[in-house]
Amino acid sequence: MSDKIYFNTSKKFNLRRSLVNMTTRVHHKVAPRHARKMARKLLLTPVRSQGKNTMPKGMLVDSISSDHGELKTYRLGTGPVWVLNHGWSGSANQFFPLMEYIASKGFTALGYDQPAHGSSGGAYGHIPAFVAGLEAILDSEPEVAGIVAHSMGTASTIECKHAKAQTVPLLLIAPVLDYLENLFGSVRRSGYSMKLFEEVVQEVSSEYHYPIHTIDPYGKLKLRPQPTIIVHDEGDKFTKFSVSEKAASEMERVELVATTGLGHGRIMKSAPVQQSFDALVESAGVTVSSRGE
Image (cartoon, rainbow, N blue to C red; front, top):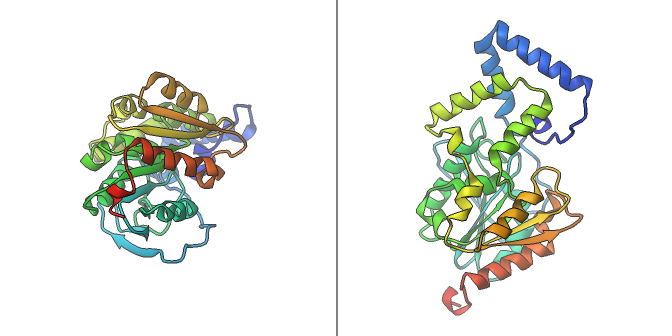
């Protein structure tokens, strides 16, 4: 259900949106506690999408513990580890084609399902859970060569304060660098009561000691010392290409690879992403000899 809110890009008036607004505002006024409980369930429950990609031969499937439940992991290849962080209502399965490519280049590709996503445990998804999921993965690895992230996974990657996340190159696919504007704008377009939504946001912020106003992927990307390559489709309907374009123009260590006709999802297994991975490996100074081959 939450996908219909977060992935709703229509700005036109419609009856359904008006009914949603009226219903949620009345519910919040008459029974505020119950309204918050239902809103939390609705707004923080991602769709557990069924994977469409075939699991590559040699994939090792395992799990690790996190504060938000068991996380299902998928490991392919040998050599230095690249972690792959999917987005809202996604799963590691979306990365399987790219993982095969990364493994073919002499690296280990480590994907995982975020809390409440794919085959992982957990009831709710939100930025604190996404960050905690990535931290658990990074804790489980002695060393990490880089991180690949998609959509909301890009925001959580940049937000992550783990030392291993701070010092590695990033490949960001269809990033949501204006996270708060994107989030609040999506809910506003759905017609959902903004007052009720803001109360749920404050509850989550307080529960996980993660103030909403501190979330600033764009600003934090500016401070990163390692190279970042963004691959973004000009026609992406869910995250703004213009924000990625602005980041590349303002930030010395950020490069943008623009695509057309690939949208928000298909881009994940596209040739430009593979080529950008190669370019990032080269720019970060990772050579065949340094990989121990």
